[in-house]
Image (cartoon, rainbow, N blue to C red):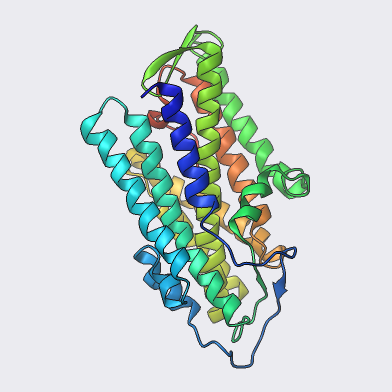
Length: 321
C-alpha cells in the first residue's frame, strides 16, 4: 500500500473511529445539569458505569446504549489488531503500529468518561453536589482551535512556558547543526523525507498524538476521577487526589533518576488543569486546549531538534503530559 494511502487510512480510522462514537443526542449548546439531591428516575451508577468500562463498551451496555457499546467493543480491539499486524508482519513500520496502539489506548480511556457522563445525564445528575456539563467528543475536539480557549490568558501562560522549553531544545541542537533546518532530510513513517514533506508529516503526527492524549487524559482524570472524588470528598481533596493519580500515571522508567521529578512536575500540571476545570464549573474544554497545546509544542520542538529520529521513537527530554 502506498505511503500516503496508509497515512490517510490511519487518519480516517482516528477520526471515524473516535469522533463518530460519542453522542448524547443533545443538540443544544452544552446544557448544564445543576447539582441535584433528589432520587433519579433512572437509577444508574455513574462510578459503576465507568468501572466496568475497563472492558470496552460494557459501561454503555449497562446503560442500555447498545449501539455505542458495540462501537467501542469493535473499534478498540480492531485498532489493537491492526497495531499487532504492523508489529509482527511489518516490524520496520514501527510508527504505523505505534499510532494505532496509541489511538486504541486513548479511545479506551475516553470510553470510561463517555459511560460515566452518560450515566449522570440519564440520572439528571441526581445525588451529585457539582454541576454536570454534557460535553461530547465533538466539543472537546474543537476546543484547542477556538479563540476563547486557546487565546485565554490561563492557556497562553503554559503555552509560553512550553515554547521556551521547546525553543531551548532546538537551540541546543542548532549549536550542533542537527535540527530540521540544518539537515536536508528527516525520517518519518519509516522513510527518509525531504525537509518540507518531513516537516508536514511530522507536525501532522504530533497534532494527532497531542489531540488524542489531550482529550482522552482530560476526560479520564478530570471528567471522571476528579468529578467523582470531588463529589465524594470535596473540592480540594478531589483536586489533590486526581492530580496525584495523574502524576503517577506518567511514571516513565526511561527517565531514570529524573522519574520522581517528572511525576511531581506532572502532578503539579494536573493541579493546574484540575483548577482550571473547577474554575470553569467542570467544563473540560479549556483543560483539553491547554493539554493539547503543551504536548504539541513539546512534541514538535523535539522533532525539529532531532529530525533523523522517527517522531514516535523520539526520546522526549521535555515534560509531555
